[in-house]
Image (cartoon, rainbow, N blue to C red; front, side, top):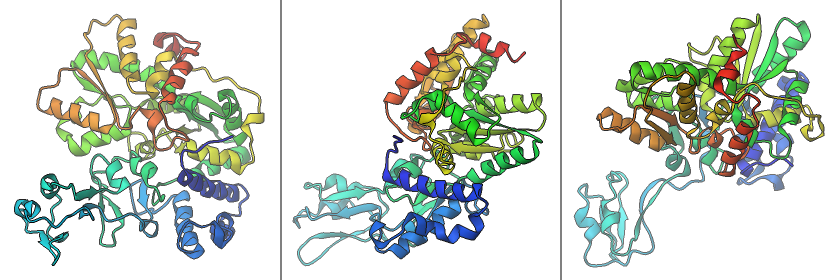
Length: 473
């Protein structure tokens, strides 16, 4: 049985599945207004104030499932009408306020934002408050607390604020498209744009005119997903969808580890380029460190380039856990090689839109990469792979790697490097906690996924990076 971590994910999946089903049948445009009614058929199946608001929100979800706002370059979008249930963020005085005589909160507030009513109970003037937290620190009853919206709490780079209507607002200049806010929003008011229609279009055209072949490139984190079936059945299911063949992005990881290790030894210091959210963060927050970012493309783009160089009219669809990959695919340096990016959530919707029950299928084989390429999916895996690549190429270099598990750890390492106090010569940056297995586009999240990745890596036929990439020559 398929599993979603939250009901929000399940709702998102139902929209994607219905949009895809209509697209396969060429009935999407004529039935687009009916999709919200199909998903919420009656007034008793809504969690909003009324069925009409729920359907209006679903209409916005359908738009995002069809590619979203074309005028917004960000792959993450806010559904304003769905963002209305969270309390306003900031410091608030609770019922624990005793109306004491000390008034320490008033004394410490430099902006004059604290006042008192006739019962001596404190109140905070939001127009004056600068959220410094000084009042909360001095209150002897801890009666002043900070309320943080889930999306703002999830966004560690502070790219989310509130607009005049109290809805979430994303600063595109700061946002790294990691999708943490997408996963954490309890009302599904923030979503990643879907390009599922582009995939369906590619597959249908390839079946009709046979002019090109559509490759499905799956991220190694696939081994921790679709837990209700076997990986070999997922591969067969992809081919039943209409993909010409399925390849491992982990082979691209082997290729990157091989080249990145040489680049590191030549330059003496390097940060990884595999995580697009990490690279985007360097661009926005630490631009002075951009020269240290590896010049290698990510494993996704590296393998896609190889496929297109070797195969005429090939189309490449990357399938993984990452919303930031959708943004990476729009970069000028990547756009020629990667045609579309799907998440695992979207792949599940694709399977079900064609009534493909993968648990009933025969198992196919997926074996293109080494153990080291496959463990790129979890934090520390890239550093292990670079260590192995240095060893296999007999490169004499004393690697001092710092694997950064999550964007906060990335920030600390980059900050220390910017101040020349970092005792390391290689920063492995992973924006999501746990690495790719913690990506917003996963069906499931959890610590057990790391064990699944290591198990999957040990099952690789090729035991070294050199053996894995030797087939490319």
